[in-house]
Length: 159
Image: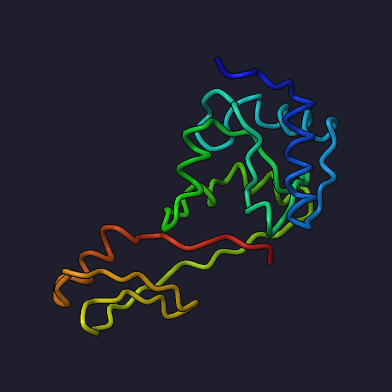
């Protein structure tokens, strides 16, 4: 049986993670309760049951702060953090509005992949250089593959 952590313990743990990462770690209980009120104690992404303190940007980049932490369900938390994920989680208007209300401007890099032929096909983002090796993919099928699996992928960052 899993131990149920109190809200204070969860918050303390997230602040400790940010401290260990060398980033800001100043989210207070009062700020977190205000954040929960803003999102009506629901997942900021899907509106489901809130289960975790979610870091909008990775903890090692933006820390545990009022402008980087939002409530999320486990499913959205896991789906958002997958490599090559769709940016739609990051582009959630309600979440962006909340973060902007805290004085932080978010920008997006949307990957624009182009297929390169080596011994096998490599997909390379022309903007940031992110690469995916795709052995077995034919060059003439590469654009359809990009359109199907990499539409609106990229990352968010503080402007």
